[in-house]
Image (cartoon, rainbow, N blue to C red):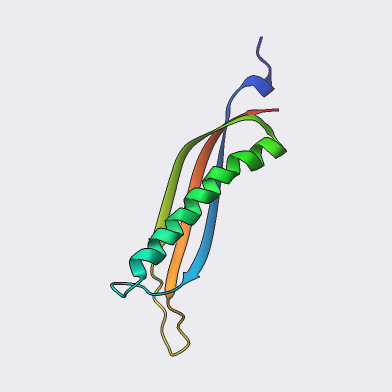
Length: 95
């Protein structure tokens, strides 16, 4: 009979950060958004290693989502950039 450690478990993780740089149609805005997605995907790729070190004997990435938006800020102190949120779901087998 399988014990609790043999049953797969879903683990969800999320990250949020701000990247400064050009937005909208400005030169370099596409590169900034691409860099943001690359950071989310790289985080997802490393997360299985973190889960294996901490609590999983096996780990498989099930999904990754990224969301990028330009915050509305007013006033002269507005810093140009994008808000980035990424979420990822893993299927693990606990140790």
